[in-house]
Amino acid sequence: MTEIKNNQKGVTILEILVAVTIFAIIVIAWNNLIIKTYKSSSFGQEQLEAIRQAQKGIEQMTREIREMSTAENGAYPLELAGDNELIFYSDVDQDVLTERVRYYISSSTLYRATVDPTGDPLDYDLNNENTTILASYINNSSTPMFTYFNDQYPFDTENNPLPAPTRLIETKLMHIFLRINIEPNRAPNDFDVESDVQIRNLKTNL
Image (cartoon, rainbow, N blue to C red; front, side, top):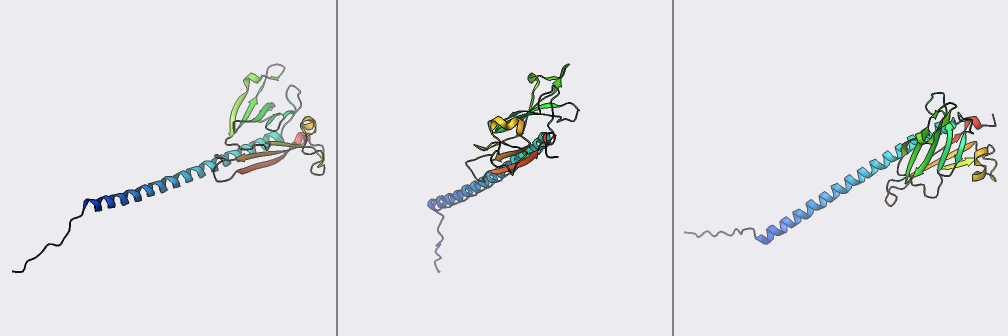
């Protein structure tokens, strides 16, 4: 009789360990790729939402600044004209009465604070200031949020932008600037949102 020999070899423990190791490396690499892709997508969505919020905020600021007018207590329309803080009077809720409006940046957040006139005679109680967030992740650094110009701009380049001492009386045009980045140390780069606004009730070149 012919002797039949069994030449099949069993799988060794070493081979199993090698296969498991390779499989584990593939799974880990795949998981890392998925996590990285998810984080990148999530970061992009957050950045887009921050930009959308800033654009909406700057549109609101432009509308309200354009319509600034004399306060109910007779105060001049523009109360404070700082680089990153603005206080003025405007009928922002269309109730006939003029509100006190303050825009300011604190800890990379843009705030809007309003005070309704109350009492007889009408006045503004700052204890009743109502504050809301307009935009987050502001990264203006040394670039001011507000820049001020007189009624001779752009022809008058010597006196424009206006220095702080002359802003309250001479401002007729303003530039608003916001730089957005939810994580400045990481791409994508900063995104700039800006707008020019001419103050209707302070115009002299009608």
